[in-house]
Each structure stands twice: as structure tokens, then as C-alpha cells.
Image (cartoon, rainbow, N blue to C red; front, side):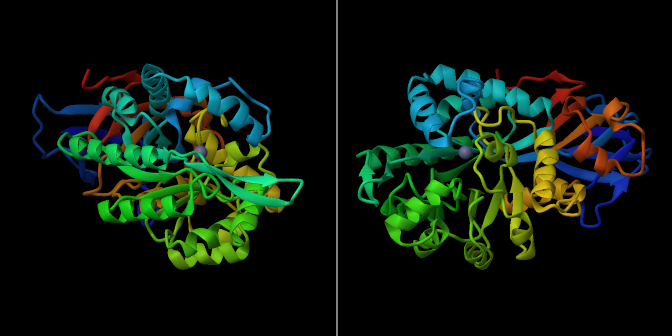
Length: 432
Ligand SMILES: [Zn+2]
């Protein structure tokens, strides 16, 4: 058992958003067994680990809903460029040179960054998932890995004002990649690694209609989430519209790939009609404020319109080549500020709402018992140094400090699936 003793504060993120003082958390196997004031009568053995939390804030680990971990390899490699030029001239050619070892080493760097900044779950899209898995065995954060499928692109000809589909002739290779990831999942299930697979077509402009549908069938058959980038740029919106005579989300909806297992990333150019579709299909959204701002996507995530429709909003950093970090505390702050500034309204996207996006809402999108500290929930949690200067003065509004002030490197301990991965800022490597 692990006992978090005498916690200075526990940010429960439970239904009442209670903040408890001087409580204890007992973790047994991978679950939170109890959260209680009095544990004096309980018997502990020498095998149990007791963490003194009298000077620590305990909260659910943050959930980063959109990453490309190995892109940490490309951090700082190409900045300050247009998305199309950045992707096609710099990022994709450089990615093509990456070896499996590059993928493993850059994933390890990314995992360290996530761990040290208080993230316990990430949702990824990339390739060479086997090399990523090797890194995850060393730092086993809760991981969702998707093989990123790209099998062509919509090309726009300025002379004729027409679009056409350029096929890369690699659909079968890509489907093989997805099938291999599912095979890998069968092996993962035999271990106690907290790793799941999901299905990740890159976008409506880089995956053809029939592949998008096939991938959804694979997701349905294997009960997997389906995550896709959509409406990231104005160019994408108009190219899809020209090619299919439908907006990107209308197009996806007509393919019947949208439902409560669908997670849509970016969505900064969505129309109100598209948001209505997302509401109707119970799809989930991932807001990547920093990445969109750095690549100057031009529009801003429709936070208020999505919230009005009760669409589930989560947060992600995106890859480190467009962010350039994986720090979810920074991401929470910037997400809130960007929306406030954009809408000329400081009352929207308040600190509690944004913390919910990074915890409860993400847990809802993934359908996992994480994101809140409750009895019988999975023990994915972090502790912070309560004496860190960025958490002072010790006011009654700790949620404000967490979102608007905290230096994420005040993270002290990280527990994922009931295992201590960071202890007093020392990384505990597993399975190596
Ligand atoms: Zn992305």
C-alpha cells in the first residue's frame, strides 16, 4: 500500500470540487482505497510506503489529450513558419530520417518532461509505436498510442480553382501499421503497463474517404477511441469544402465516423453548424491553444460556443515541435488567457473550468476512472510543494494559483496506476 499521510490540501476534483485539509489517502494496488481523516487504527506493514504530505498539495495528475511524443526530437528544429511550409518542407522530411532509436530516445525525453510537470496521462499519434513502448516501459505513464495514418492529400490548383486527391499509394501499408498496433495491444494486455491503443487518422485532408471509414470500422470492432486532427487551418476547411462540397465535420459526419468514441483535435475553424453536429454525435474536443497560436492558425478555438452546446472540451499541448513544451500547467494558463483575450471577456474560461478540462473532462473523453480523487478511482495523482513561492500567499483560492501562477516544476511526487514514478523529484525507472 501507499499512504499519502496528512495531506496539507487535497484537490479532489470530485463532483462537489471539494478541497480537503489534513486528510490521508490510502492506495491499494492501483486504486484509491480510502480518503479519510483518521487512519490511526489501520495496520500498515514495513512493505507499505508512507509519504509525508504535510507540506504537499495532492491533486489528480493532469491529462494531456494531444501529443506526438517523438516530435520532441524536432523541438526548435523549425520555428516561425507557416503550417504548410513547416510541415511539408521541414517536419515531414526530417521525420522520415528518424530511426527507431531516435523515436525511443525522444519519447523518453518527452516522458520525463510530462512526468516532471505533473502529467500522468497522454494521448499520442505517431509511428514506430514499438519503439515508443520501449520508452514507456522505463517511465510508464498512462499512455494512449495511435498509429498516425496518412495516405494522400487534397491538392488545390490555383490556376483552375479546383482540388484533386493525390494518392500516396500507401493505404495498405498504413492499414498494416494500424493492425500491427492492435497486435501489439494484445501483448500489452498481458502485462500491467497502463497502455492502450487508439485509432488515429491524421486528418480529413490527408486520409481518403474509404480509409477514414475502414479505420472507424477497426475502431468499432476493437472498441477503441478514434482521434483525428480537424479544422486546424482555413486552408484545410476550404480545400475539404471544395473537394467534397461539405465542411470537414459535415464530411466526417456523413462518413458516420463521429460518435462518443470520437475525439477531434484543434477545430479552430469550425462553424456553428459543425458544432451542432459535434453536440448531436457526443464527440469530444481537444483545444491546443499554444500550438494553434504558435502556428498562427488565425482563428481561436470556439470555447464559448462549444460550452454553450455542452460539448466536452479537453486540452492538449500537441507535439513539441509546435509548442515547444509538454507542460500542461502552462497549457492551462495560456488556454484560459487566449480565450479571454479573444472574446474580450475575462469572465469566460475561469480557472476551475480550465482545470476541469485538464482532468475530469479528459477522463470523460477517455472513459477512464481517473481525473478525480475518489475512492475506487484509479490512483493517478501528483503532489506539489505547498511551500513553492508560486503557491504563495496561501490563500483560499488554490485553484487560481494552480492555473494562473504555479511553476509546474514544483511537482514532487507522481503516482500512476498505483505506482510511484517520481518521488521527491527523483525519477523511479521501471522495468529496465
Ligand atoms: Zn497534432
